[in-house]
Image (cartoon, rainbow, N blue to C red; front, side, top):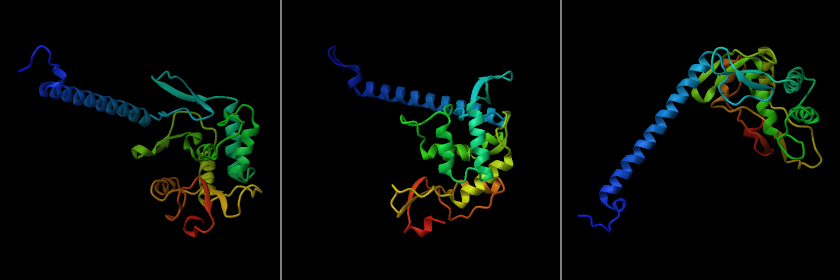
Length: 222
């Protein structure tokens, strides 16, 4: 029996109630998360981009409810020139794309010195949203035509993926050791089905690597 000096939270009954309350809170959080995801999937099926606005786009209130993507100039124009330049070969490497974007005063930079991370360039080149499509691979939802205006054609997007699948290296630099080089290749598990879906032939041995790879790892380098 409890006395007046006992703390209810320190009793077995108190611990039991705390456990029930914690479980109830966890259940409510999971239910809320499931409802949010269900609403996002419903928006996706309607052709709306449901994630953070990509560089070159911004969100506005939609007449159909919620928010929708619209082109954000002049950043969108810069992104368009970079994507089309890479697809056509005018910008013949990811390094060339990065320098092009870094030289543009409108394009947002990652680093205080005005440079971009290599991963930022890769994400820009890979996003199908710039071709007017929406996708949610983490939810196993296939790309479909979106409601927003495209910056490049779908054919140009496929060309970019083909170039990336071949593995383009950055130009040789004096400050890099000869045993290392920059490369981007596609993952066998997630990207291969997506590439095949988009009509791109990709070999299962291709692995996504963003950064540096060592020359003496032949299984990882084309």
